[in-house]
Length: 88
Image (cartoon, rainbow, N blue to C red; front, side, top):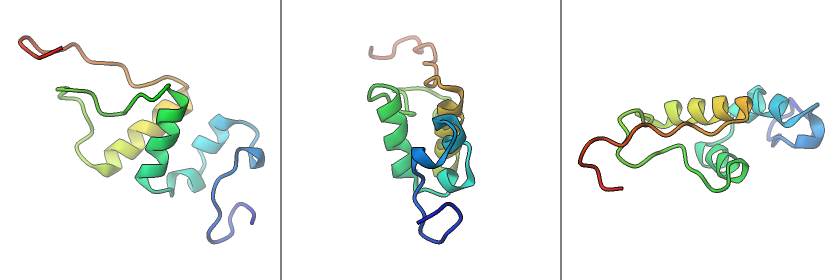
């Protein structure tokens, strides 16, 4: 199966770089779970959601966009300062 064909699943071998794959419309069309799995694999098991962080994504679309932006940048989402009184 090739890029652009129905049912195509992004393959790093089909792109110039991982960054190009992450920026592709094919990658953006993947289910959130697949994108979050790529994020965790790229960033040593980290997650886009941080404990007690008011900047966590509000919905699946925000989570998907945030994860893709981080993958393209090659950097995990920075941790926000823990609020006063939060369990650490």
